[in-house]
Structure formats: C-alpha cells, structure tokens
Length: 504
Image (cartoon, rainbow, N blue to C red; front, side, top):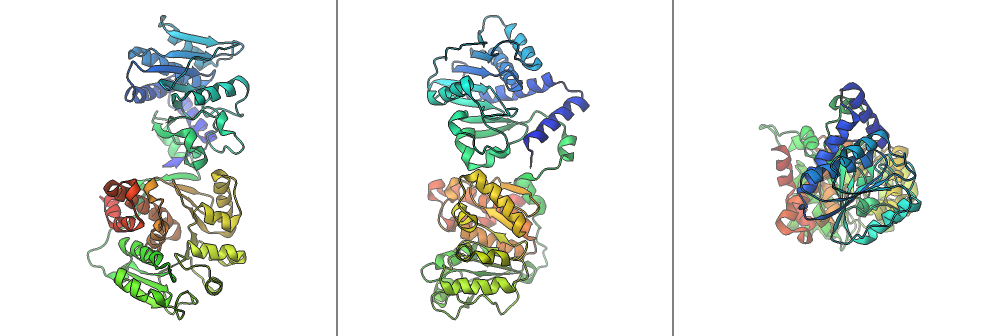
C-alpha cells in the first residue's frame, strides 16, 4: 500500500474534486458516513457523546457526523468553535447550517469565552477540532481544551488525525498538547506519523476510511513511503517447480554463536531452513559442534579453529548468501575476524546482533560494509552504531540518512519494522505482534533473510518479504500460544505455515 505525505493527500483530494465531478461537500459526506458507521458499530445510542468541531474541514466532518448520529437516534452534545465569529470555512458553514435544520439539538457555537463541559470516563469524545490541515502546534484555549479532554479519561475518537498532531513529522511537538485518541479514523490513507512509536499513545487504534478518492491519481502519484501487506508479498514469492532440487534454492552461510550463546546460531539456522534455503551451513566456535548437530541436524557445521569464539570468517567455499552476527560476541579476535571479512567481501551480506555491536566498537568498519548489504538493528543497536537518538522519529530520520550515505539497507526492527533503502524509499511492515518482543526473535529474522537471498531474491526484496514472513509467523504463533507465550522457537517453527498462508 502506498503511504502519502500530507501535501500529496491534499493534491489527490483536489484532483478528485476537480476532475471527477465530486464536490468537497460530497467528500465530507463520505467521511461522515464511514465514520458514523464505525461509531454506531461500537457504541449504543445511550452513550454520552461530546463532539468538538473546529472551523475548518475537520470541523465540517465532525458536524456531518453529528447530524448522522442524530438521525440514528443518538443525542450528542455539539461544540463548534468559531472564535470571534466568521471564522468558519465555507464547507464547515454549510455543514453547520444543515445540522441546525434539525432544531432540537444540544448545540453550542463558541465565539468567545467558553465554559468547559463536564466530561468523564463515561463520555465518548469525537475530536474534529483540527485534522491534517494543522500548520502550527496548538496554543492558548485550544491547547487548554486538548489537555482537559486528555485528563477527563473520556474515550476519544479522532477524525483524520488527533488534533494537534502533524501527519508526517512531529519533532518538537509536546505530547500533552495533542489529543490522546483511543481510535483514529484516518481518511483514505494511514499517515506517516502512525508508524512511529513516539505517537502510539496519541493515535491509539487506527482504521482507514475509504472515501474513494481518485484511483487514477493514487496510481499516478509517486511516493517514497509504503506499507507492506500480504498481497505485496504474494506477488513476489516464487512458487516451487516440481522438478527441482536443493541446488535450486541456494546455500546460506550463517556465522553465529559462541560459548554460552549457541542458541542464537540454532535459531538463525532454523529460520533459514524453515523459510526454504536449499542448504544451510553454520560457522561457529568448536564448542558448538554437539549443540548444532543435535538441535539442527539439517544444517552443516563448520568449526572455527577456536574453541569458544569465532576468530576466522574467511570462508573456504562459495555461498549464495552470508549472514553474520547472532551470538558471536564482541571478543577482540572476533572483531578482527569481522574486519578481515568486510575488507575482502565483494557481495552484499546480512549483519545483525553482535556483528553490529562489533562495528559499534570499531566504527571505521562501517566504511567497509559492501553496498546493498542488510543490517538489522533494534533501537539500542542502531544508537550504538550511529549515535544516541532522542526519540523514535529522530532515529527513523537518521536511518534514512545512513542508508543513503553508506548505500546499504537498514531494517530498523520494532512494531511496524521499517526497511530503509539507499534510494530513500521506506517500507513499513504490517505483520507481527508484541509477543515477538522476545529473545532470539531477531536471530530467526536473520536466518529468514539469509534464506531468501540464498534463493535468489535481491537484498532489498529479501529484507521486505523476510520481515513480513517473520511477522506473520509470529502472528500464527500468538494465535496458538497467546502473545505472552510466544518464543523465538515458535516463530521459527511457524515460518512454513506463514509462507503457505501468503501463497494460498
């Protein structure tokens, strides 16, 4: 799915009005109808509802929703903010006049001083103050109103985006001056801000309202933001031919494990095997021989000359893909081995976990990572590599910058894992759940990406579909074990089921 920035959405909206014979009021009616259906599906007519409408199009949406709720037997309190009078835009004015035709309604138009209504936890607040058209942070009376709504404990539904939030970047905006929504009903598209963890408590659950903006203009509008969904992955995954052998599906080498951390090697190997690699080899410290042969007999084991650490990464054979990092530790000899490998590597590799920690201890190694290699840091690993970031938004921006600078692919792990490409494109992953926040989950992902690269998928494709498959396997595991009960081993065991579910 394409994700558009705010100015692009406004342009698509204008195109729809100007070229498809649809008026702005008709689009407002579509928003209101979809939002009203969502609201009445969740709350009964006896629910106490307070609707706050601003002077622009977001307020127009809220007033149209108020009218439709009244038609369905609801009795909302409606507050339209027209500070100073004559501040309503033409669409908001039209929606107000149509609402007032109903006569006996609980309606207040605020033009000056305003006594705050009595809100409680029993209220449903519909926030239509300021949507994505907001240009400056809230201040004055609107800031005070937003804080009051947040402190009331009421359930809040925001139309478009929570009032006070910007659709794209929100650096420097104070969270308490933004509506804390329980449900955000986004118009036509999710917004970039929804995928950044800093905003999770502001957006709450989000759902897209399809108001049928121009399909042609959506197709023709280019973007650098995407949400990876099941159909996207299905289009890319190749079906296996009946006459094939393990040689057709590549050989993956995973350099992983050390004394006390062989579990990481086991999980990475299982991730690679369960996602279809023809052959999987593990290079690790000699102490891992019995563990690997017992736990993952399907994988080949290549022993390092050292008993407890990896000291040599200069491989004797050719492999379709190479992944380095899970559980290798940060011994000086291991850092030296990684340096020697990177200085001679010509093809893209996958670097995860302790490989990244080794590089953080010797930052000059960043300059030797082969182009189009994949690194898969979580937030702490990323900050160790590229410097501490003040929040998730600044980390995402830094990741975009670093992917371009080093010409690599960065898989920034977390909810909505973000895959940054060197060309500036960002892909957010839609699969996965909080149960995957468990030790070893990232090691499985490393194995999956290595497997896909071994099978011939390009690095940028392997990162995208590997992340989705990994998340879907976690979703399947959570269905069986519950989110609290998911282990990394469960994720690995469900990779085959995830791929089957995608391809059905």
